[in-house]
Length: 219
Image (cartoon, rainbow, N blue to C red; front, side, top):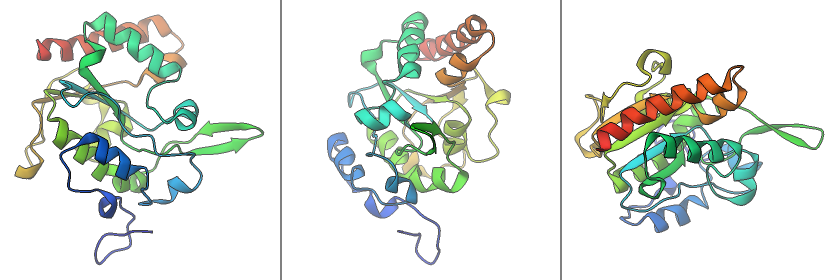
């Protein structure tokens, strides 16, 4: 398993090419062996959207349907995301969707594959892909959907509950100069959290309200 020089932490860094082309980046990601998650997953699920996307939406990881189909946000959470983006006034054609982790992590129960949240080491291992995507896209707004996305970008101490719905300076002030590729970041809940909520209507309204803040920044 590839590791950082002088260390034993898994990382995708050796697989990330120096390129100015999203298609080439996605092609390289298909062969990533930066951590063990590729062993059980069907395939790498890379980001999707145009190179001119003004907003990037970052989720946690692909789910079962995404893993089988090889595209992000194509399951129930993805369909809900399309709905709330439209309600918030964000043009889906101007958005790029991706995940902090590019392989599906799961446990098996009978014939079902059950989602398992990636741990901090797995998120860190996959971060070079997200960094490369954001550098190429240079979006105006980065929307972080859920805790894993927030921590992948701002570090393990980040809490969505404390920063939800706020426009945060992007990149963080301690980001190295070569990492400067956007204007604002906004954290909110993942669409899957809406699907699990006891009061789905209220949860969905809250997600739409957060996305309207992002839409305002784009305007």
